[in-house]
Image 1 (tube, one colour):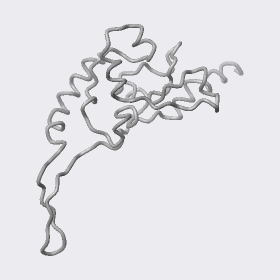
Image 2 (cartoon, helix red, strand yellow):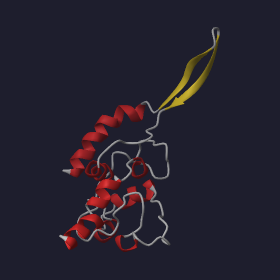
Image 3 (tube, helix red, strand yellow):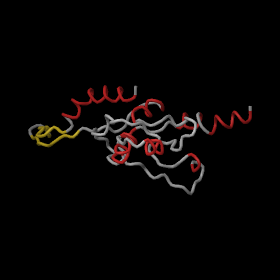
Image 4 (cartoon, helix red, strand yellow):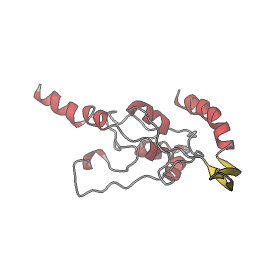
Length: 157
């Protein structure tokens, strides 16, 4: 399902990829002036819920049992989430694209990413380093409610 989803999105975005950079656009300045410039279109942020963000990035659901990387834009594992001395090392979209295209099941499992050619690999985002992973912020409510808070409620009740 996930690969078909990204294939469908890839077709939809094909026209966007063709018009990302529009050269020689004349913009009016004041009543009589103008200037010519190139216009580049980029996505700033993707408004999505937790599950949709996981599908867009190809990441396993963060509340899946045994998941080691619950935050899609960061490489901090589950055991270190509460350790304030551990700093999030932001993942690179290029690195994640290489991992997702890999046929190495151990590598895919270690990064909790599905094998797929992500349709967002060639779409520009304001944050070029993190790409789709930076544009799809994790929802704090779902991260917490489906993780530590859910376990605390289970222990108490």
